[in-house]
Image 1 (tube, rainbow over the protein chains, first blue to last red):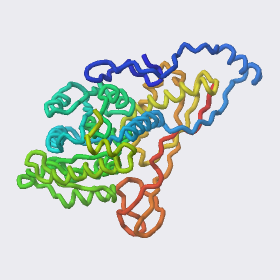
Image 2: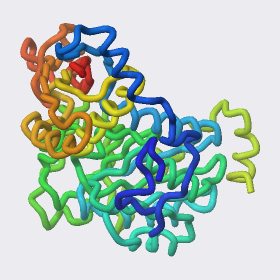
Image 3: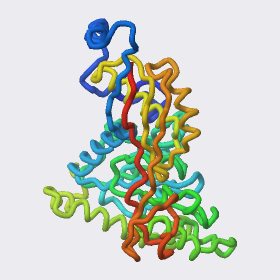
Length: 285
Length: 113
């Protein structure tokens, strides 16, 4: 078991298997002896008195996740990969939207997908049917993907240089907001079959996202969903959020979303040392 | 949100620091948590007890220092206090606010043995 990150125990599974045993270059067999420490204590304090002392550490609680996220982000930028973290509540149509996106964006750039769910590999299977490479991460009891799981999944996925990696997060509008995975953007998907006040009910997620896809707009005629109000709420929480209205079923608005993805991908490749190769081949083979 | 994993993160930091800072148990932990960090304090205390059991932080007490939520209003150019992400500027009523503080989640200091 890896003692740095605790991987290898617990219930996290990548494509149904325990995460690979990656090397953190240390083991916990270190041989410093704790008796010596207590002697220091005895020397530095009067015997019989409690040896309480204060220690300043000033550490971010999520520092560990953030350092894994930085590693992922480094890998993405080195390989010229655009990574997008798709977040939403369960049932917003993330997987259908992703499957259509993969089919319609075409073969270039090469798309690969990390699917996060508590259990089952159903979603990865749906993605693989589109022809894209997909790795399923099962979080077990966990309610979100963290940067460390993504690091392991990337080892498995081996994404193409100059490609796009979509990370479909666990359906949850709360926890994934706090966990940076090293992605370029969070994209929040909200379907019109949910309440229009979701952005203010779950403000952290909408605040953390750069783009909101308002999905299932083909159903609007049958619903009492007030689009303008929903957009207004989203802008209250995040004045900089961009909003696109789409339907993954009818295809309406999807072209704008593809354009957004292509533009974001261009931004990643623009000025990248090997951008020329990527734009010609769509990814190094 | 995810108070359980946050507590696991805290205990992990305490265990890592035990080696570096030369202590065997933790008596008190001072945390600095902002109102916009998305942490439910009661739930955090509850989870901490469960997660710390059997670790060097088993008897540790949590002292939570709550910071203020601060934002910069793009309309009236003031730094204002906000309690929630979707609050309006208390001065001019605009929602064009850029959060500048209050989303921290930090371990400040420890009392150790």
